[in-house]
Amino acid sequence: MIKLFFKTLRLILGPFMLLSEYLTRPSGIVRTPEEQQAIDRECQSLSLYQFRTCPFCIKVRQEMRRLSLNIRCLDAQPQGIHRDALLRGGGEVKVPCLHIKEENGAERWLYESGKIIEYLRNRYNKGALP
Ligand SMILES: N[C@@H](CCC(=O)N[C@@H](CS)C(=O)NCC(=O)O)C(=O)O
Image 1 (cartoon, protein in one colour):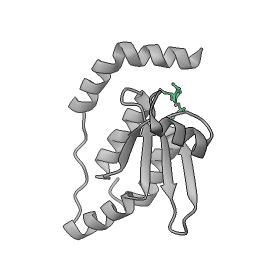
Image 2 (cartoon, protein in one colour):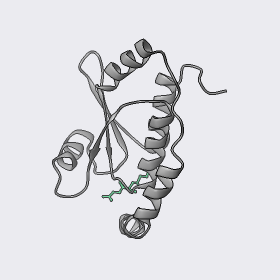
Image 3 (tube, rainbow, N blue to C red):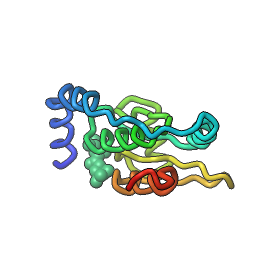
Image 4 (cartoon, rainbow, N blue to C red):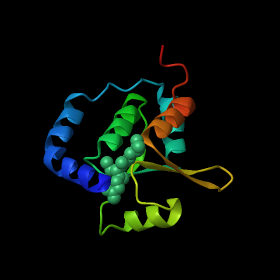
């Protein structure tokens, strides 16, 4: 029932949500080219499973922009290969989900927009917020 509610909401409000996302894009924090290159390399071990018009995913994408993180976004809509990967790896089809490949090869599937944002801020904010 809740799933259906959000699906309908996404269908009806989708275009407006995307427009609002575009109009309210935060300006990203600025790093030195060297720092940004290092962060870009780190971000290669992260993937965000998402729906384009999911409000929780939009919240995470805006935070990624604010933190200037180039994280790969994978669409987990039905009939997509990424949906299967999310289900197999994370255990449920719920977005957003951040897939984290640790340096030791371990994998984490982090669900919940609030937790994802907290993780990204802890790892990449480096005192940029007051
Ligand atoms: N509390 C979660 C809510 C996430 C959520 O409800 N996501 C919906 C999309 S908006 C979902 O994945 N639904 C599963 C589906 O539609 O198959 C969060 O903040 O991330």
